[in-house]
Image (cartoon, rainbow, N blue to C red; front, top):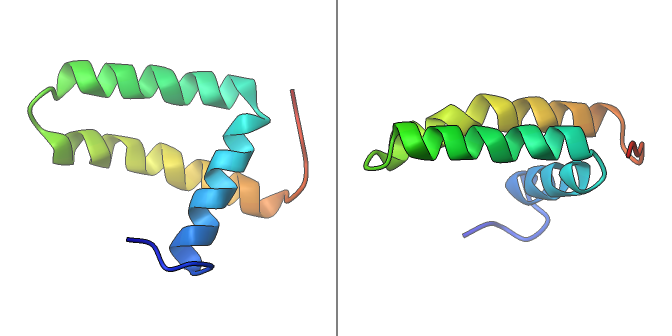
Length: 71
């Protein structure tokens, strides 16, 4: 569960909003998820850890450039 308007809420919102307006990053995330799912089909923790660095990077970009859109 995520606290409404808490830090995790804000991060998830930044992440999803950024990906909606940055197709190259969105495609890279989708590719990473497919690769990790194939590599770790029975290891959810490894899958999630594999995505974590990418997600943190996107959140940092989104927070550094709020409202900036690229297509």
